Length: 127
Image 1 (cartoon, rainbow, N blue to C red):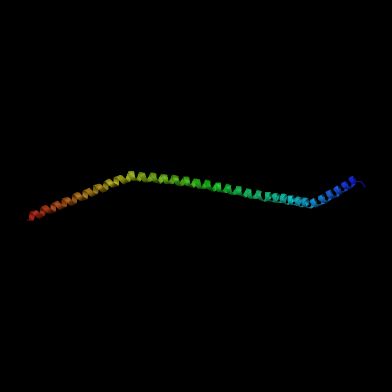
Image 2 (tube, rainbow, N blue to C red):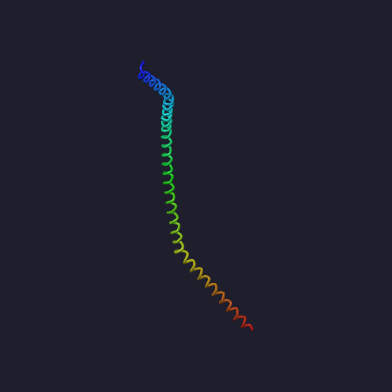
């Protein structure tokens, strides 16, 4: 055996040892990648229904909000009608009632002062 053959044999043995030592981490790394791929697949399978449920929940919320908006619009319309009715009542009935009450008050004051005036004259006539 020549020196070159011995060197080649040593290199081949060293390469076999290095390959043998590196095989175990490579197998473990392959198993890790398989586990990661399975986890990602499982997560994808579980995330899709969750996203669908989230979309359904958002749809229900949007429907509820549209119902609330229609109710709010109805309340706004009703409040405007009530305000208009109050203004109508004030203009049609409020002012005439105030005028009638003022007239009756003035009539009462006038009649009471007139009655007091007659009472004074009759008292003065007796003297």
